[in-house]
Structure formats: structure tokens, C-alpha cells
Length: 70
Picture (cartoon, one colour):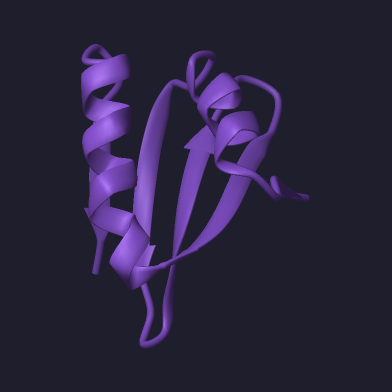
């Protein structure tokens, strides 16, 4: 079962351990998913916050791929 993270700060900590990060865009919000060895962590963000979060993730963790899911 996936674990939902409630804050950006907690998600950034989890993302440091991630193997890959996936982004699923919806109509009103997007889900950002970080896959670690043990769990899948998710964070819901609004579409306006999404681009800044993706840029933060790419700058902080350049080795981890960030993929968009259609």
C-alpha cells in the first residue's frame, strides 16, 4: 500500500532515498510519487505548485529520474 505524505518537507526527505519519481497530472491536482526500495510515497499538490516542486526535486537530486505519467 502506498503511504501518503502530507508536507513538501517530508516528501523532500523521502525523495532523497527514492529510486525514481513519477508525476501523474489530474484536472485539479497532481500526484507526485517517490518509489523507494520498501514503499511508494505519494504527495498531492495543486497544479500551480507542481512546476516549482519538480524544479526543486531536479536541483536537489539530479541522479534520480523524474518521469511524467500520461
